[in-house]
Amino acid sequence: MISVTDLCFHRKDGEQIQTLFNNFSFKIATQEQVALLGDSGSGKTTLLHLLAGLLKPDSGQIAINNEIISSYNKQQLAHFRRKIGLIFQHYQLLDCLTVKQNILFQHRLNFPNSAPTELDALIEQLGLSEKLNKLPSQLSGGEQQRVGIARALINQPKLILADEPTGNLDQSRSHQVVKMLISLCKERKINLVMVTHSQQLTQYFDSVKVLANGCFNE
Ligand SMILES: Nc1ncnc2c1ncn2[C@@H]1O[C@H](COP(=O)(O)OP(=O)(O)OP(=O)(O)O)[C@@H](O)[C@H]1O
Image (tube, rainbow, N blue to C red):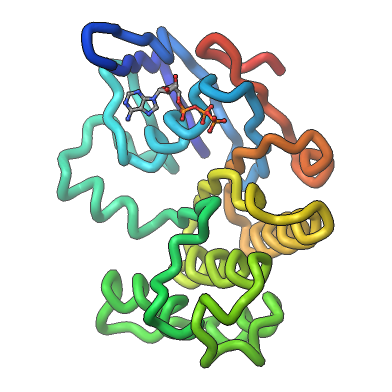
């Protein structure tokens, strides 16, 4: 469950102050799959970064699964981020590591003493079994994003935040990747918030929220 109350956030650009959110409140139910739309510059990425604890609100409260992350210090936020999965438009895979090493890299840093429990099942479900020893440069865009999804899911997060994960993919690959992501999240009861510019992709989600002028036009 995501609960945001009276969120205020502004950005400074030189002398200019841009108010992105002014007393913005909303809730996203546990396990809900949300597509987040909005014009360029409306603040979608900023909102995702606030939910991930990568940015701190000026005021207001952000609670994720009963953790009030808006009052966390840096160390608490670093610990909190181990419990969420992040998926990026440009995949952000490490070029010199194989597919398998990329999937496991963060898990090994976060949980050095525990082996991932569902690596084989994930690799199978994401159709990556034949690709484990390949480098990212030897994969298609869709395959690279499936590695990004496996990397996010391997830590067994309760929340996945995805920022335009299909922004670099053609239409058919986009649908394939989103359907896969949604089905994996539903199976594992994971909350998903995904930024997209594609109206067509929203058909797979439980709800669609459109960000404009610092709030949702539902
Ligand atoms: N690091 C930054 N410093 C100053 N202003 C920023 C910074 N990052 C973003 N902004 C500004 O904040 C506003 C919201 O940006 P954001 O990236 O959240 O929008 P978005 O809805 O995700 O856009 P897009 O769909 O184009 O990715 C924009 O006006 C942007 O110029």
